[in-house]
Length: 409
Image: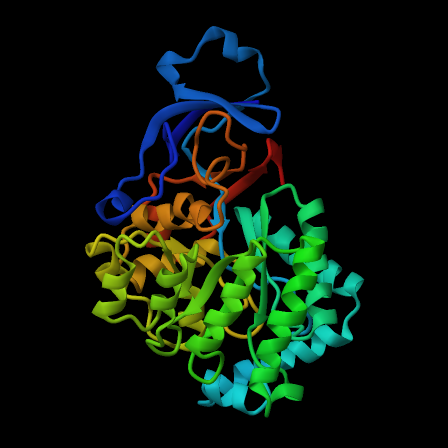
């Protein structure tokens, strides 16, 4: 397949590296360009005035006026779940907070009950539809967490569903064990007992089946303390599970510092960041990941992206797709929020959602950029003048077609 007369190809690079600070405001592109796909990978690209005659023996698609972008790399989701929580949505409209709902047995525990009642096949079918919709919107790589089972049998069930999705989906999938998402009701008065079960029972069983790449914990006041989080994550490390941490969503809790201490791949959320948190992340190698959709849905403060970038940090953006605090897998909307609410430039936001997202889930060697030999996971837009017009015209759907592994979705 040969795409010709492309108005602009964005994300064209000669190598992939995690972007920080001022680098994030640079999104290289080719104008009046062509791109050739061979099989499931990008074979070559260039400008139309340098199109080799030998390239024109392919199925040619005229992309005049359109943009081509690398597909999104969504490095933080909870897309495998059962049920929904519209009633809690109405409670929030009426003034209930995330913490209020959780304290009343709602929130994560509500979804836990639905997951425990659902069969593995039911979970797979509903979750697969969500993943399909995300691909149709432009997502080309995905991280999925467990965390709605909160006992061994149901956490295994969730991770097996993620494995089935991984086997069927044409996009790279990473799996994260999040048994430390909340305390189940049967351990409400024995939190240490549940921590011990996560460490002594769940982690070894999950590692034995090879069901997860990462281990995560909700390190926050009212959930898992810094000490409990450290013990859980260190246990996961012993079984080869690299840490990712839900950090600083509700408070500056010490989770950022724990992530730095343990060499976490990423710390995610970061709505509540102070200068010390930002300073501790600098030069740490830990990837800050912002989830603007969650801040929007909860009417919370947004991660201070401008302060973080100006301090020289890099940033990834993900959807946090889940039934309670971010019930959407639309990366376009998260990019628009990043620009409008977090004061990121369009180039910074797209880099955060593509190349830096790929680094935050360790798929940057084959996804997140337009590079020779990379997967042909691409977005072809409607006729659009430039990248900036996408977040500017918020609410518009810019997608004409999405390609995954060289095939139109």
